[in-house]
Image 1: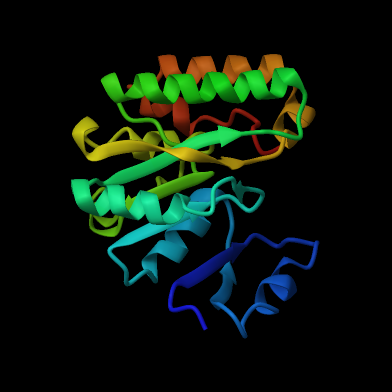
Image 2: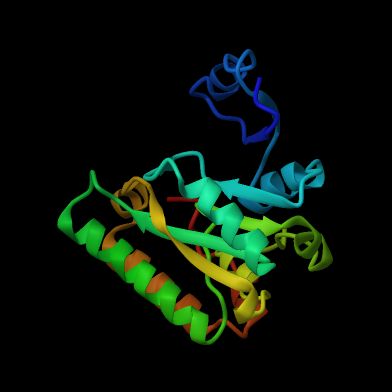
Length: 205
């Protein structure tokens, strides 16, 4: 059995997620806990972490490179980094889906010059730093991952090539224009915590 602990925060899913997860118990050190909104579920999992680093993954992502985790850990430990992320890919979507994610990756690289920007799709965080800054803000209803990652020093942040695949379900539900406009407003309000505390109807669509 793998010694790496895998914690799955389940937010009342109806697709059999807990049963599927627990079917891997003969091969993985895996368990399921009660989730909630992303910040709540991630914080509950991180509270049980005993490792130097904790990796946050969204449920619908797939690693594009089998060496990604090893390379991220080597980069983090070698550079004493507090947060490591990677590129977001969407191979099954349309060209405009891929363009939007490419734009996301571009702004992620630009963030290295100002305030780090990582998404909860793939976020390797130093456990000590995560707890020091209080984890994910549980009252924030949108972009809680962005709010957390920008509290990391630029020199303690890195983007490792390799990428993870995600789906285009958010674009299908909200539309490209609305997602793009929300992303832009968020970037312009990086300094304004009140903006993140408002309900942007992100989870109601």
